[in-house]
Length: 428
Image (cartoon, rainbow, N blue to C red; front, side, top):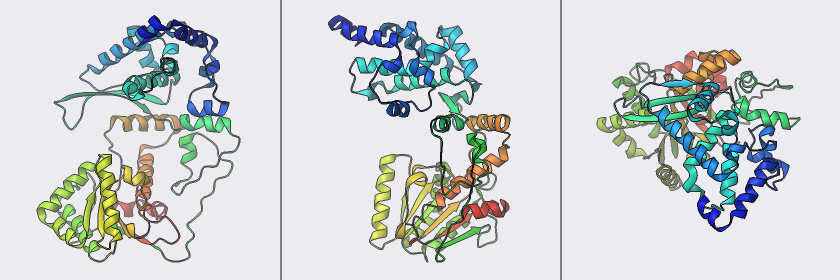
């Protein structure tokens, strides 16, 4: 495409080259606010500084991208898990591919300028190269707060090569810092900002005023409960050494069966992961519990496919509207838990099966915990508990969306009673 433009109209490429020499801030006609919103996390000096000379010409920039892609492909050819800081990664790129930090920093803007010059409308075709340029710009811009993690295979299938290179951000303060720098007064408010003293440490700011308000209710519309044992008095939990126990799975099934027989309209049941949800549903199906549940209400399941989940939600609402009633199986940290409301008759009961802790052997999570401990002195256990409680609150909060709503919340895990009164009050 660049060659075709050079053969037909070189003035376009020449004009783009001149604009890049003058500086990126003079390239477009965006208002200052729009310009800031399009690059909220990039320092101002990137927008004001001229593009490096080695990527001003389109063909030179494409050669740089080719060398970068070859380098990344070579890094993926490994048999061991590798973790590297942005500084070390940039130094490795410079020594092996001959691309310095400043060049990496301008990859995003240079590609954006080139695509505008070539008048490319089908941007989906270039999504992968855009991702690489985004990655290069972030690595070249931030020397701390990130880690590059290369995993040669999926831990569930270690014999099948499936290399993945991930740029993990450990420091949330990097994203909100431009907001604090630009605006004099910033108000952060949410229904799940507890414990309120941890957020200033995570976001690296000192609040002038910090207040926590309890929920004001004119009537008893919430009934929270903690279930620690099943009807046979066996403890229930999704701890790794207990989650597959037949007694635990059976008690979770009996709990749901007893609830669907007495609770009207819609019931939402959250699990800690997709794999655990699939396994427990299969076990219920084999034992006949699922069939008994379906005699009272229809069952719909969230999957990792967006279209399937959308159809399941639509049919779930139809079943509730016509009075048949339904149960929706969902996953904490999934799409439904993050943004779908089950107000009114769509959610009269929510069951949180287990405590949604993150997978503690994840390389990305371990790297973030190490960063938070070394930088903000946040203990690993405190952050994991805080994150799990926040996700649980996100799930159970789906059913109370207005003062007219009412519903029941069941936390089905013996660990909920060990988290202390503050944690339980936070959830309720």
